Length: 329
Image: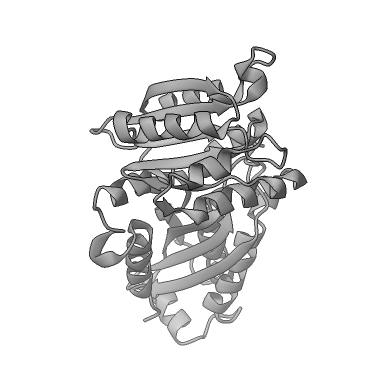
C-alpha cells in the first residue's frame, strides 16, 4: 500500500458512470415496477453506497477512508441504463476507485435482478467522468512559463559556528528547485535578530524573490528570535499558513504546538518560517505545496477563479450540473 501519511487532507470528489445495455422490454418492466425481484434501482442505489464505503475491502491497494457522500442517479433510455455515481471525502487520497466500484456494483445489482427476464444484458462500460481535489487541482510547478525565485535562510548558532551540519536548509532548497524555483540565495546566519532583520530586508527588497523560507529559531529558547525579527518586516500577515503547518505537524509530533513560526508578505515576497529540524522542514514543504502556488497569482493581481469562484469550486458546480441531468425518467 502506498504511503500517504505525508499528504494533506483535502476535499476529494469523483464522478463515475456505468452503462448497462438491456432490452426495451426490461426498461418497461423497471418503469412499471413489475420485475419478479422487485425494483432494481432502489436496491442498486443501496448496493452502490455500500460498495463505495467498502472499496478498500475489495481492491487491495485502496486506502480505507471516511466516505462522506455517495450520490447515485439513474437515467433510463430505450435500451440502456446510465448510472452516475458521485463520491466525496475529505482525505489524503482520491475517491475515483470508490466511485468506479460503486458504479460497477450498481450495474451488477441491476443485472442480477433482471437477468431472469433478459438474457441479452451487457455492462457496456464503466468510466471515470471527472475528479477533483489534491495535487491534480494545481500545476506541478509555480508556472510553466514564469520562473519563480526563492531564498532560504538557515538561522542557527550551531550551524553558523560549524558545530552542526545544515540539513533542513539543503532539503528546502532542493525541494524548491524540484518545484521549478531558482534559488537566489541559501545562507546560514546566527539567531541574532540584528543579523536576521537586514538579511530578510535585503532578500525581499533588493533580490525581490517570490518566496523566502527560513528554518530555525521558532521555538522557546532565549536564542529563538525568528518570529520577532520577521514580525518587524512583514507587512501583511498570512496566519493561515502558520496555522496549517502547526496543525499538520501536530498530527505527527505533539511538540509542534510549541512552534512560533509565522508567515506573511513583504512587498512581493511571501515569507514563511519553519522550525529547524529536518522533519519539520519536510512537514512544512508538504503543507505549502502545491497550494501556495496560487498565492503568487493573487499577489500579481489574479483572482480566485472565474467570477470570483475558485477553480475547484467551479469544477464542483460543473460536476453537479452534469449529475443533475442524470435523473430517473
